[in-house]
Image 1 (cartoon, rainbow, N blue to C red):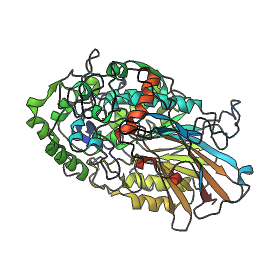
Image 2: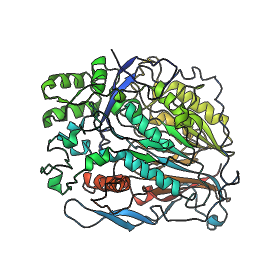
Image 3: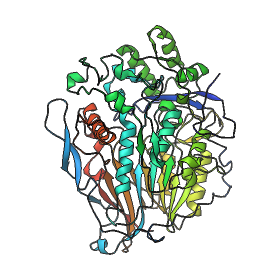
Image 4: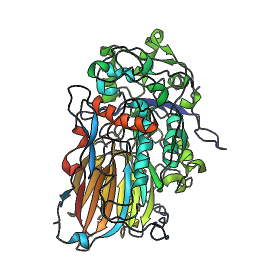
Length: 591
């Protein structure tokens, strides 16, 4: 019988219709890892608007800013605590390299189609300021359906830092809470937004950790046997870093340290302060489709996800074959994975079954966000509403600014995305209804990764639309100023020009699971000279740049998380992006 699990108590009956789905963003430029879970046949938590003639939904009123409600007034511009002041930088070394504080990154002005006029700094008026977090990938590393063994085909398919994702996310929350306002304007921050892949395996454990990290509370980043770690990092398989063991695994041969007590510390309870800002949530393929590429699987895999067996090693040939089927989406039903696991039944290692690892449905994703236990500073539902019931929504940032969060995951399978006709029509109506406001659009996928138009099994007659069609819609509306997203795990900023010649910016931000582990502060200002500016400023977590191998506290582990992620990619800087993709001022014509 297929299994699903609600991560929060609910009087509503749990939807038990599930099929296998999985997603691995395995692309030419990045490997986003592997995580697994199951997915129901519904592509949304509830039916989307059915006809283009339906009215656009009402946008909630903005939350009063701290200054407007008698709280903190704008501060002076600042650099401390941002990558303008300092960036964790590798010290000299041949193999494993230690990190330390280094020089910051300067701000680059990109004027696009309009000039950067002198004196604008003294004229500008803040319109909105917020923080983007993306691709946290909180990972239950002991989950039976994880595909760590793909590392036999490509080392980047497994990350030695994966056991510390919660510690890194908590440290990022601490950094955001410490910011006095926008670095450029000093204006109070209005909100934070996650742009997808907050979880990794679509597991109930991970969803609970994600919501608790952002709303605040105690987290135990562990599953299965509470007294004994049962993942690949104490398996004795030399493919993986075995931190507590003297064995010369492949990572120790590269200089990775032996750290006695590491796994016990990594699974020990810790507490998140929770964001002090209102925060909004955008869904990604790892949140909806475990590994983002397997749609409509079977009950055998559903039982395996919560069961007592785990495959920890595979031949390089078999790993290449499975990895290829994920990358090419040649096995969207997950039949090949099921048969592979069955063929290796004698190689499966015993682990402790855990129902908490069961997959969650879109309806449960929605209910979990609406649970008062996870409201924190609000808003209730973090953008999602029971009335709308969709995984896309709009929200009011201020009198002059509206935010729109899209659902770009494709329920038919594969890690690349698309949007259905109903959502695209809703987007058109919403942009039209708010033609007098500046609009910020948020999604998980980028314009170049909306390339999968496989039909939604729940809506087989509905067209799916890719990046060019979404760009065309955004380009028809002069009120769109920015499209903010993630997915590619890389800093990249791209200008787009609408049909009438107006411009908007696509801002993609690196993940927090791979080096350089960044989030981004974005400030929208009116320069009062016929132009707008988007100021983007990257931030690291609050963990110190320099690590101490004897410090296995949550703070020490968060620092180690960054250093391990640097060395996992052998210092590869491609995900950092160029200077024009990091700290910037992006000019726009005011329309």
